[in-house]
Image 1 (cartoon, helix red, strand yellow):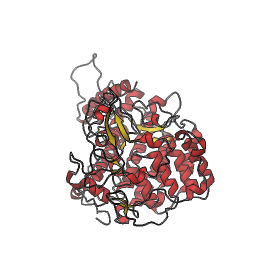
Image 2: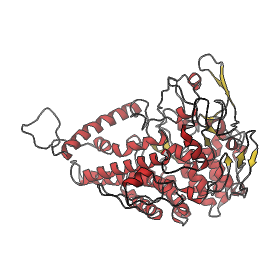
Image 3: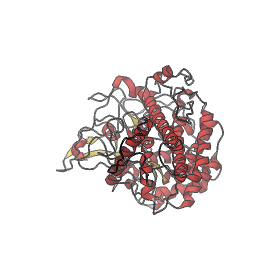
Image 4: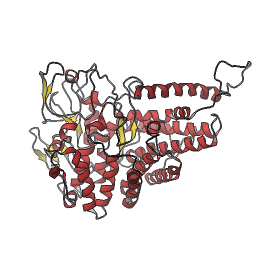
Length: 538
């Protein structure tokens, strides 16, 4: 089903791309009447064709899980994922050490790749808006309204990422070749909020009948979800908290009834998860049809799994064995929490064919300067199918219903309604504990300190330098976010909101200060646009 959808999607995109090209190049004069082929003048797009028109604006999102994409940008500087030097390399000129230690510069690829991804998507969205508003594509007035609304919502999604990572970026709201002027982070925040609120009434509503048509698109609920995320982080982005606004946006999704918690935590991340009831917005991948080279490839599994995991999962590809989990985060789990085993590969790893032990993964990781292959638990959250290649079929659940519930719970917690927050968190925990009593959590517990033992680690795993040991307000709730959303390209954002990212030490990392909340603007971007000023501290 997903194969057919993506294949036809690509064919429609190619057809419309040719017609667009004819229009933009002025190739509209024909000397003869054509009856056997579809021409620009005779082409009347159906709704499915309109979807294909917008495809180019969505495609850059696949780089989220690509090489040094948004996944790395959100996880490598945080307290969970570490990429130490391994026997087969992984020093890579110190790039991962700089990310871990918050010592990046304006040449660092992780921040630049996300900048490039977002502005490519923004420019493509602006181009589509220009094409339909100018009449280059023969669509109805109603279709113009729908397309423009969806493209503006998607553009706001890209800007919500840049708002979080780089902050002070140009707002480009039209397709132009003029050098854009830089905006402040507060201006970008206001733009995202305004855009989403304006277009939400015109976006597609999700119903049981149109769920497949709206899959992977910016629907009304997806826009509310992004709006809730921006409101959740509003104090960081704009200086003013917006907890009530966050709850309002979450309630629009909850009361809509279109989504529900998945009965299985693992199923959300399965190889064929397109029908999962809690996915609000996914980035579709396919090992063949949605894989346009290294730029868009889903390769997080290649980066984390060991070469010998090829035997464990009966893979065609041989992974590279780089990233693993900080032992301090592993130690924070409740042993009865099934998300521990659902998320991390630990201990003996067995051959898929004969059942023999291929290797044994250990939790300890002596130093980012050097670890053996088997040191550090690996992410096993995303299903690996037999015969897996360098790209996976798993759609990335960028926005899922559990996040809506947790955003509402956090906003309730921060506004003095901790017991109501605890009810929501307990509901979510229920599917990951065999004993309901173990799943229950109280408001007082959520208000308490984190269970992560922060401080830099010595090679024997003991705390070497404890650093800042002041309590983390609502730290236990931050832990809940970590256990639920591990390896989902968001940990950095959560740590910043709770004040941990810029203050705490972990593994081989010591904090460098508030300025690291934003990444530097890339040197190449600075050199090509004289209107840009570098972010403070760089």
